[in-house]
Length: 391
Image 1 (cartoon, helix red, strand yellow):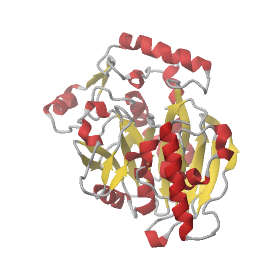
Image 2 (cartoon, helix red, strand yellow):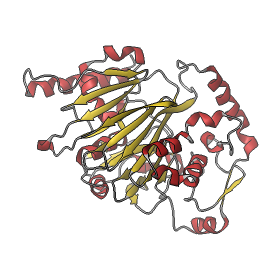
Image 3 (cartoon, one colour):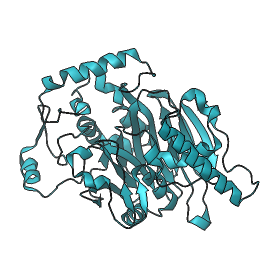
Image 4 (cartoon, one colour):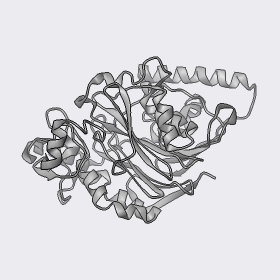
């Protein structure tokens, strides 16, 4: 176990000791992990150990796609092909702390699937802090995706509201699920927090919805920016970036060239924008996602991540490889070596390759905002799904 993992475990152990000291010999506030499938477990919580700095100690960095149409909110969590289980966590309301009931998907990204029964009570008690998407009893749904902070002022990763209570970007989803009465209220809550954190050259942005509206929330130039007039689609580029600059106005008239292809009617893209092709697919077929939970799941399947290694994918997803010196302005031939390396890794289908394994879609979540339900597909298996209800 590395030093950061030891520190995290120790910290959580201390948290658990204090938590249980306050309630004596009370029963455990969570159920034992119930295995539903390979890489999927279910847990229910009457309480948990809140930690707004959790993200400082865990592995991060992932791609992801999100879209909301009508009552249906879809989300893919895309990450490396690793031997890591996920947990559906159902958290009960706690009126004394202003906490609403919620259900969502969480994962300790350093946990291996064969070690679930060896996880400490402290780590299980803290599991809700690493929720990546979810919905609460008020019909408020939220998820996080990465964005290329390398293209912006890095001070935006250090603070959004100096002097306010600090919250790491990984904890934003859980904080909103616990306390937001509506999407607009969620934005208000976050504007009164000091959000910080990064994963190397990447930051986070969030899609936040209720039955009435959807916000894309981003940390730009040291402040929180939220818009509710977007396409209701979010992949891995800044949606709020520089909308009124001369460059933005020029692009609006001429279109943007991305790896040799012109994209019109798009948000303004920064050089390392990722997920442009996925965004285009979601935008083109957006109507399908508003018909039913099954329709939204099918829409999200159309952007499952392993298609980025398939030669038959049209158009090819070049912007999944905008790292280092490669940007969206590069010609297709410039991506050849990076793409070939990923394709060769993909062919191995070896979950133990760390780091730099290929990526795929860990889960596809579809939230019904009206009925407070979750429809879940795991590990790009769209032949079956799992249904969960909050109420």
